[in-house]
Structure formats: C-alpha cells, structure tokens
Length: 403
Figure 1: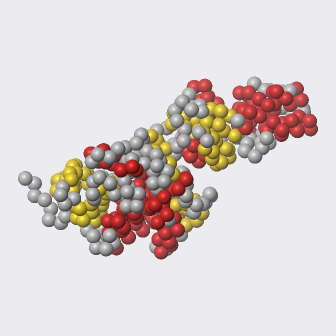
Figure 2: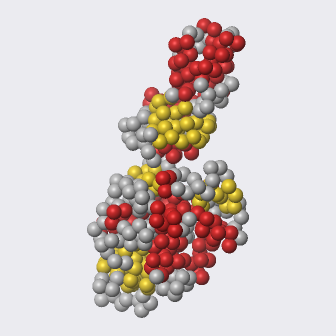
C-alpha cells in the first residue's frame, strides 16, 4: 500500500486560475492549510493572455443580468457580497496602475502579470501552497472529507482534505490545457452538467457568405448586432472565416446553430433616407461613392456589388434604394458555426447551479465539495464580467471554508 504524506490539508483546490487563487487566498486567511494544484507550468495562464496581455480584470457596471445561466438569479448572491469595487480596492492596495478603456472595462496599465503576482502574494500571506505540473489522478469521498492521489515530480502522492474545490475552468482554449475535467468530477459526485458550448467566440460563414467576408477581411465597423431578442452596439470585424469583433463575440453567446443574426452596419443612420437625399442633391454620383460617406470604402463597394446596384443614384428608384438600405441597416446573415473552443474566451453552461448553494458555492449533496468560476453554469458578457465572477465565486467559497 502506498504511504500517504503526513502533511494533509484542510482544503485542496484544483486549478490555479483566477477563481482558484482567489479562493485559496481566503480559504487560508484564518490559518487553514490550503493546497492549490494545477497541471500547468505557471499559475494564472488565462489571466496572463487576457485583454491582449493587460487583463480586463473587472467592469465598473457589473450587474446580474449580464450573466447567462439556466438560473439567472444564482450569481446574484456572490456578485453582491464581493463586488467589482471590492476587487478594485484590492488592486489599488497592491499599487497596480489601471485604466478604464470603454464601457466600464478596467485594464492593467502595464501587464496582466501584475494581477497574477497580486494573487500569489495574497495566497502567500494566507499560507496557501501551490503545486504546479501536478495532476489529479483520483478523488474519493471519505467520512472526514476526501482522499486523493496527485502525480507530481515522477511519483504519486496520497493526500486527504476536508474540502475539495473544483476551480479548473471549462473547455475554452484547449491549447492551454482546458479539458472540462471539472465537469467529470462534478458528475462523479452526482451533479448534473448543463449543455456546454463555446462562448464569446467568432462566427463562421458558409460558402455563399464567405466570399464577401474574405474580400473584406480586416475591415472593422461599429455596428448593432441582434439575435434572440438581445442586441449589442459595438465593433464588428470581418475575417477570412466570417465575423469577429466585440459585438459578434457578445452575440455568439445568444446565437444557436441554424439561426440568423441581424446586423445594422450604420446604427443611428436611416440609409434609405440618406440615399434619397443624396439622390436629390448628388444624383450623378454612383452608389458606391455615396455609400463611402457612410461606410468604409471596401465595405461600401462590396455591398453595392452584392446588391447588384451600379450606376448613378439618379437612375435608381425608391425600391432599389430601399434594397440598398436594407442591406446596410437590416443585413441578415446565417452563420454556419463558430470557431469553437480553440478561440472561445469562455464556456457556456457547466455544473448545474441547482445542485450548489449560491451563497457558499458548496454542493447541496456532497459536504465539503465546492465548484467555482467558469466550471459553474454562469457565463458573463465580454468586458471583465467573467473575471468578476471568478473573484466573487472564489471569495464566496473561500470565506465559507475559512468560517
């Protein structure tokens, strides 16, 4: 029989990401023996690459209605008890300079590594230990908590703990080791997992739309994008595979395969009225030239060509101008899919909230088992919301564990 290490822990946290490190800092705050385990070579890898290396660590306008879940009320407790202002105060206490970019999004002035260093410092203050390049091989429930086996440095170590926290995220960005392992742990203990799919991800087109998109690759435009009753006013970006940009990433979380999205390429401008006015004043100009006053030149040219409207405005009747206006104000396009988990920023769905206590993040049926962060069926909008959920849910579990 394998010899079990003498130094067992009060709490073992699987995942050294945003939620896991936040949880560790609070779970060990009152002297609890805490261990964080991660298979990666370094902690906080998703933090490091986020926000172009600057980490959009929260948003000034965090609200529960900006989170997607089968239970839209579940996130309210944690988000209201550990708010964006609490995390901002923590960032300020570590002297990390930051700035607001757009729509309340807060970014580090220097590097996302500042947030990782801050969390590691908080963990160190709490006495939490960190094992990297370590893999959980087995986990079992015992009368006093959990028994687990962890492979590290060429050997397997047997440990026990009173509390076990699933903080290993979802399936997004598999090149960084994301596998959805946390879902399997939850299912092992009888928890349901809702449907999972890529979220905050670029949309892809089929052959009919792709030719035009490829011709416009690199063109960005402020737009209004709608699907299933939800609308976002932000930039879109044409790519070689379809559409990306903030508005598209946002709407991807609401879009389902087989559905179309509506795109207004000139929000705030009634293009038909504008074209009628131009026809009266500048009828000798062709449609593409006139549209260049409203849209980027390449986009104006492509829309004119695809609408089959060439020649001078004076030669176009109201019906033709209406067709052109609809192509801009009411462009309906049906994506064929997404770029998948490879580029998705988050995973939609996860461990069903019906089995978790919204105040503590603890399992309702397995004492001592906690699930936090992206592994839970709570997904925020683009713009710092998912990090705030990590901080809030990690805090909720950590403070509950610390007592």
